[in-house]
Image (cartoon, rainbow over all chains, first blue to last red; front, side, top):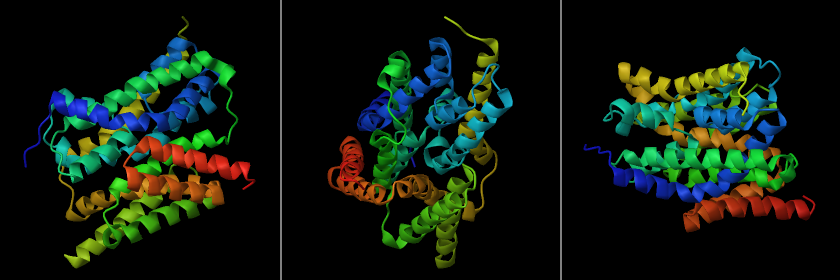
Length: 232
Length: 101
């Protein structure tokens, strides 16, 4: 199968990512506000957003921020939250296997949940231009940094209380991403039920993150793989 | 503009482990072909990952969360528009909160 990587693909990925920005906005603004409240300078805030580019990892690490910064704790926090990204690359092998050099390692550098989900959808719809994924990632990266800067500058002026409905925007975006991933009841119903049920159960038992997420996701996926293996 | 050395070091450390997460899984796969079971598992992983990600957050909000989840999914299925779906979800939580749920 022919996989290509073109500028047009990058552009079409960026276009596909535009509707996701609304769901990302509250998250980025809050990350900027929180960084400002923990005493980071604007330069430090921008460096973190640009180099780490992972909202939930940044927020969790900022929870532990102090003077001096507890290096081991914040690095471990980033690692724990971002461990979920590790199996995404392998799932995209259909495209990534045909890439080399900066196209491969640069695309992986911009990979976030959104670009992963959209790219899987594009792949399953027959898309063969791997530039799509880089396009999604680059647009989200640029806007993410802009949002964090805006949040930092607005500082305490836009104080949004914890638990405000606006925070549901991030979850809502991920819920919407499930729609194109659904391949019908016969394939996905049981793996998805097991994934969600186990994650919920583990969270209820106060298992620390990201264990509930990984436990649910891998058990659900393993069930699907085992069933397909028996049928084959 | 201020840049403390301990802050810079922490940011570089966070960036390094995050890139390791992003690229490491694929680098391992590229080095050695996975068994068929793992290949099948990877096809199920995207959906399961997002389900396991959203369900605890939705459940935490109780009835409002589940209603909002249904609204998001329905709007997305009908319109294929992520922005509308996000508005539907946030709006549902907001309205049910106002209604005292």
